[in-house]
Amino acid sequence: MAKKKQKSKKEDKAAKKSSSKMSKQERKANKKEAKKERAAKTKLAASKKPKIAMITSEQRTAMIHTAAYYLAQKRSYMGGTQQDDWLKAEQEIDDLIKRTKG
Image (cartoon, rainbow, N blue to C red; front, side, top):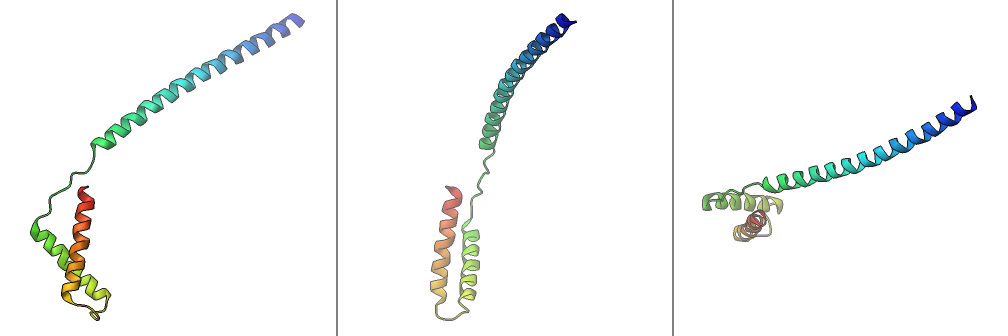
């Protein structure tokens, strides 16, 4: 009986070693697979960059008009001119367009 216990202990140790080696190999394989998946996702995300539509001069003017209105409203229509509001709005819209294209 003593020999059986020793044998079973040895077998248990061998089984543990093989299972831990197996899990190390599995972990390595999983890491490699995860790395490949991340690389594929990165490539996919890079290829799906949004395409920027061109803005017509009429659209730009309408955007400036709206922005100028909100600037005037923000200052309660006091202490400034329409021209100041328009120029500031024009600068803001042009900056926004440049950032979006860039």
